[in-house]
Image (tube, rainbow, N blue to C red):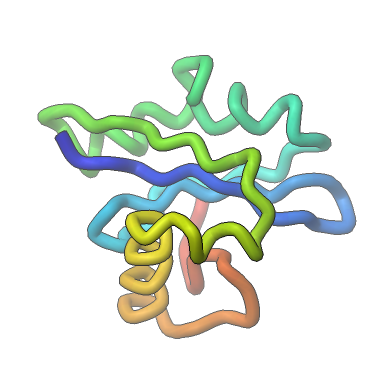
Length: 105
């Protein structure tokens, strides 16, 4: 089953969470007030965002929760880094580990 990687970055307003498919496609993003809400807002422990996830992987998927990682720890997780790298190849690089150029809902 394909993986969807969920991770977050600090923002001046809270945590910006991203969901990136293993093929590099950006699937969803959300600004949460703090890390406690990220898992719910991104569908790790709720049904939120699953319509976006299932539209990309209609046969099913596995959510990979990397929301506890700091950005300097991403490099220790090759599958996550591969998805981020593929996203940057598709969309162009950005200044951080966020998916670039996505129209997130």
